[in-house]
Image 1 (cartoon, one colour):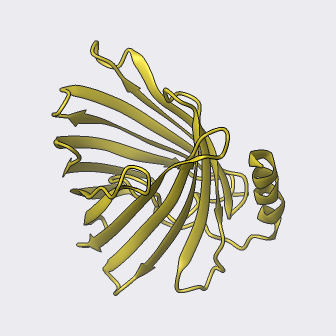
Image 2: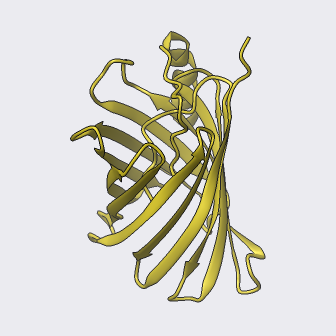
Image 3: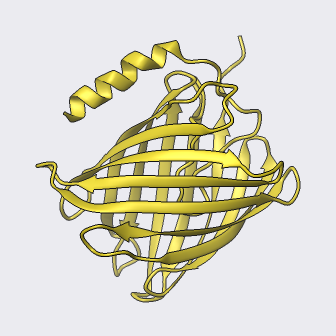
Length: 229
């Protein structure tokens, strides 16, 4: 089933319209996945470090995205952990994201599929992403996902609701709730933060939140656009 889903994404990617944006769009900061794909032949790195107060551990993390077409990208992420400052792999995922929307649509919707090889128990996740705007500066992103094991048993549902406000063309802030539902009950976590664009292809960010205890994070996104012919 995983292979079939992956093949469908590759085949449908060939009918894409242009989705590349002048300014980068990142999954950072926060938990919400962006509804935009990075664009054809665009490579993007999203990296940072989080600190969780409840176990006093740092979690360096990086996420790599590459656009095979304007609507279809491959991506991979790694999260490190450990008592000796990140001497273990907590998560290593490989996935793909496909943009379902027309270029002139008011709403942007995307599907993301990923498989985590580094977790204690290998698992996969399918996430539907929806994004739109209330106004020129206020926008929202919703993630709804299902996490399942290798036998397609449902482990949990995942949700994120993100509100973002653009202060100006370079700086913005966000507030979001996120957590799991279904098998583990309903969790309500929260975080907030800001981002700043140094230029169209480089962004820095920071956040603070509560997830069974205080956590902090900071990082950057770097986009390498496709070469113009």
